[in-house]
Length: 442
Image (cartoon, rainbow, N blue to C red):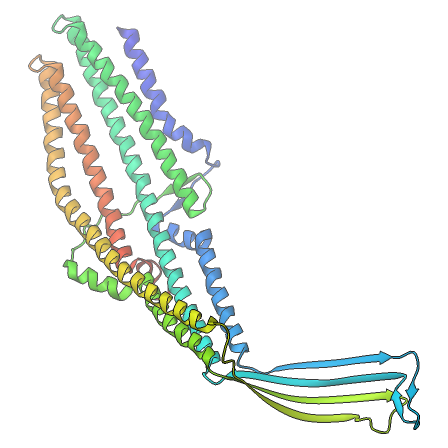
């Protein structure tokens, strides 16, 4: 039996080192970089590709404003050309018909505007599109920050699971030793020791599974934030905040959610799009100012070497096969779609806020009871273990007490980390997470 006990102790030592070995394998020599949750937030905002994509969307929208503004400005063009003929030609009267060479040049300024002011409407749409892109960027940042926080707490949840597994291994090891002693003096049968060995083997498997899960959680966090493997984390202290009434969070979400504000701006853009499309029914006015010069060799007596003139053209398309009518109807349909999207998002946000609120309320109540359960389960296991050593309880009693203790430890750890994650989830649902992390300028 001694060699079996040595085998299990060696296995326990090997499994206990798996998690540290996995982390050290990916870690550089020397001290590890240590990050707090705020540090991870800042790194994620700087390095996340999805955020950079949204930042480029803002830049594209800003270029759209410049393009819309350019349509309000006149266009200036310069032109010039030269022609050489095979010969000069004259008519019977001796007047020049075709010179040997001819050249023209000049400058032209054109401006075309719709009498409906479509160009100004387009400029307003472009400005609103910039603001909408910025709101979308804020929404993407909030989603990403929540993903970072959730992954951060997943790491500590997984580490706590490893600690619980270690404590379970230690308890089961002591239980096995006690069973072996009682078997030697004939107080229990060999099946008790075999049951203890089986429970210890299962705990070893759970410990290895927990260690791998912890390593995977840390690797996932490194991927999300964009940092290399081989780092340490500074755990955020557990703080149980006061929960305001549900109506407070719903009102906050109505005011602060970036994606809701983005759709509000999109509603205005859709209205402007309808007005812009209807502007195609109006005539357009084209103005031009031209300076033109010419030269010939030989020169004719009627050559106009220089001219300056202006022109005005009113263009009124009155039939285009129903194109404008279809475009107006399409714009109006898109406006209705935007209104539907807006109302649907408002409802979805209300459910999201209520869900996060109820999660926090539930977990706050659970944590208090789970702490009591853990204290009872720990006292119960200690009492049953001592009774087993003196033959006053059975092996089944010990296993049941240990299972209850492990379950209580796991439930409390899950509730504690879920509460912290849900607190951030409520901030995201109400649209204040980004401001809480980066301040008003975030």
